[in-house]
Amino acid sequence: MPIEVDILTLTNAFRKEHALPALRLHQDLSRVAAKHAANVADGLEPFSHSGAPERFVSSGARCLNVAENLARSDGFGREEIPRATVSGWCGSEGHRRNLLGPFDACGIGWAANDAGVIFVTQLLALIDEREGPNLRAQAAQVLKEGGLRFLSSTPAVCATVGLVFSGPMLMLGGGVVGGALSLGVGLRPANLPRAACHRALTWYRPSECARCGAVDCELLLSPDDRTPLCASCHPSPADARVWQFVD
Image 1: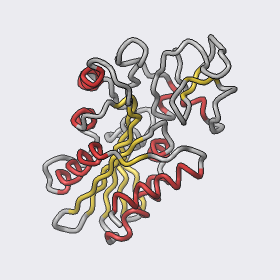
Image 2 (image 1 turned 135 degrees about the horizontal axis):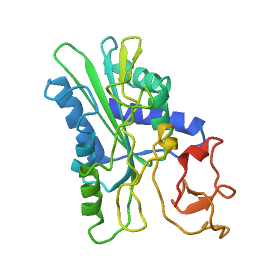
Image 3 (image 1 turned 90 degrees about the horizontal axis):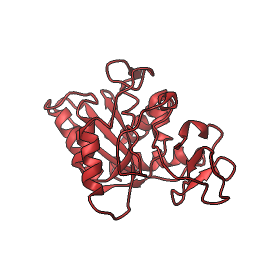
Image 4 (image 1 turned 120 degrees about the vertical axis):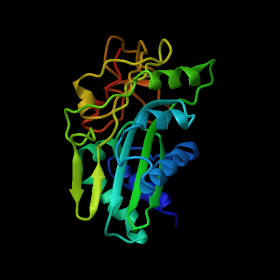
């Protein structure tokens, strides 16, 4: 089975352990992830999150929330890479939070250099599938203008701060935290609160809970159809408060 499929399978198994829905493999994100991994292997790009916003933009996907996990192996055979990679991510706080983040799609790519070192790029995203005028262009512009930002407050979040070693696997950067893109009045950057240090956030601008009609409360996004639900109605894990979607 292809490495990227095995990595997705193990990622979804980990999410299932935490009562989270599975990610689907996104073709365009995978294309970009594979290109990035190949460029890193060929020495054309650094093994870092540099250029991550552009990677999501170039996929053409309308991303509402994003994160990136990177891994490098100097000592595993190809058949061992999926389990070693996901195991390493699960053992790193930043990567683990990305794996358990509010996403519904994933792109995965890998490449090996001449020395046999294997590089893996995983792009996680919450995709807006709605049809609407210029929404894709608006999302792309937001990303270009800095809707994504690097937070240095968590060691594994920023490439300049966190390099996590796990045996011969080098896990770089617990991820790019998605600069929340607001859905209510067009897509635009929003200020990231302290909770963003714990999990990538998307800000949503509904006025009431879609199930019980509660207003003036914290609203979370339904894992099934992404409708806004209050904390009482949302079937969320115990730490869901760091997933907040607030007005």
